[in-house]
Image (cartoon, rainbow, N blue to C red; front, side):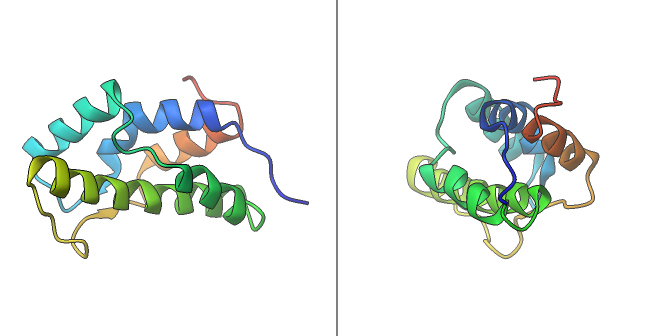
Length: 114
């Protein structure tokens, strides 16, 4: 049976804390990402929720990581096309050891503080 998740709580928490998960970016780019994440849906896509649902059949953690991977790709694409900030796709990654990942899992379970 697939895991169910609280997408709204997950996405709100992602927008608030997600920029801190990104490795391989400088502080100015992180600030831009944080501002855009907090005020727009620039980094959202249907693929995020879809990939989370598919991967959550394995585990909720797998679902969260799948959504984060799509979110990271969305950030890279938006920064390049909308702001002319090309970043190295191989260098920009998600910090899977960050305590923020636990907050995102809790939010996805509906236990978050979002």
